[in-house]
Image 1 (cartoon, rainbow, N blue to C red):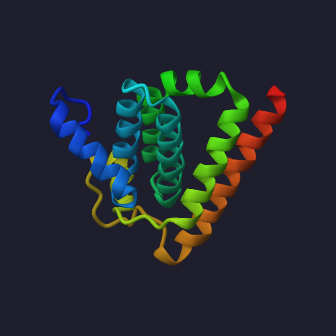
Image 2 (image 1 turned 30 degrees about the vertical axis):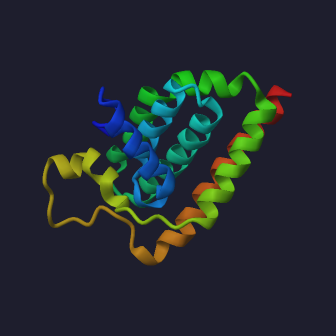
Length: 165
């Protein structure tokens, strides 16, 4: 994240290429930072796509976390990376609809190869160092949680689109 938010263009180019080549290995904060960098490079449609991939995966990861205080991390990321991209994306609902459908398909068909527990570090349980308490859902529930998260995200988006048409 620091590199993508930094000033070294050559290093940024390498990171952008790496993330775009292997997106399933990077956690949502990196994907959000990628979207900001793509937006700055005037690759706005691509930036929107990756922003919403990051957002959906962040929501999934938050839903895996048992510490409800950690879930605010998604809102923080949306607040940092979302305003410009959302403004751009919501100016053309038809294009956004295509983008979100691609995001849904990508998240449904791609496994995550990063540690989902990154978000756990943003909650009070981690801050208070409560070692005896498990703060993630059991792994056998993860597929069901992912399906529900994706379905809820899509349903919310479709309702929003209908309200704008």
